[in-house]
Length: 132
Image (tube, rainbow, N blue to C red; front, side):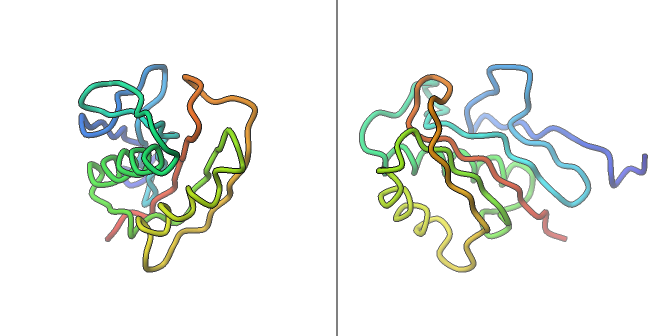
């Protein structure tokens, strides 16, 4: 396998630590795959309480931190998947999402799920095209 195609893990204290056998992110070739992020404050390790907007902001801040640790930014995100516990939260989540992706928003899927880890309301995963 060529050096360019080898995978490498991304680890940053600016996002919640992985709590299982997975990485915060994996770079493979020119792509970064960011694991699903929950509304966890990385400084305290606690779940963010409050509105879906506050939770979405924390999730996207965690995603941004992992992208930046890999040398990318939210501008480089090409695809996200949003998992919502309640699709009635879609409009509020969407408003925050637009704040974080104002220029060329990524392709996206949003689905309602029966349950998420730690019984959270939202989780977002992403694929990022590495610059250069």
